[in-house]
Image 1 (cartoon, helix red, strand yellow):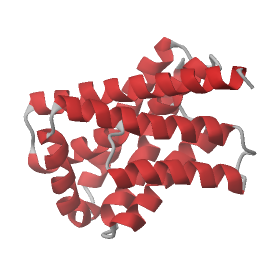
Image 2: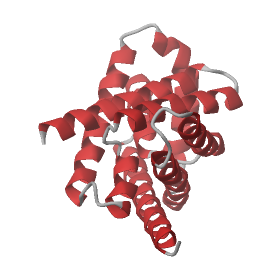
Image 3: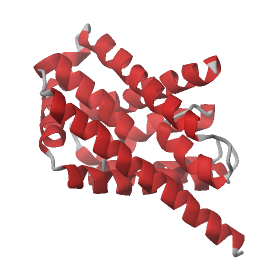
Image 4: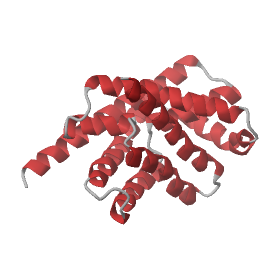
Length: 211
């Protein structure tokens, strides 16, 4: 159990690192490409990222429902730790405008929009997890597939709950926010990621059985 909590917290830190790179790079295409560094760390070190745990729970049963809860909480703790650490560095100045822009969009968005965008994000991440897992660890094919799917969802602006946890934590530390707006993002993006991840894994598992 202890190892699962540690793995989950570390996964949150890794995603935060990818988000930091995304925030500091001004060009949209380039920063979308580099966000995937966090996901690549998670997948190759098999950390318990909630959007990785969800599809694997259905696809091969390697995780249970309790693991999803642990991953969600642990990921959140990791992102808060990362956001607080950044808050006490000069790096925060470089990402301040990006955090403000991204945070304003997410916190003002409609619940249905957050939910649907969360589903789309989870589909891309689930494909990255399940297709990437079929490739040799560290191979070009694995890196390519993961990078392709992750870059796609980031460039489109879809909602990943763990990345959002970091963005919102950073936003709160810099500007403050209404508690209900924060809860709205956490609830509806989490729900979308859960539905998308579980549904995608179920579909791929069904299709694999038909081969």
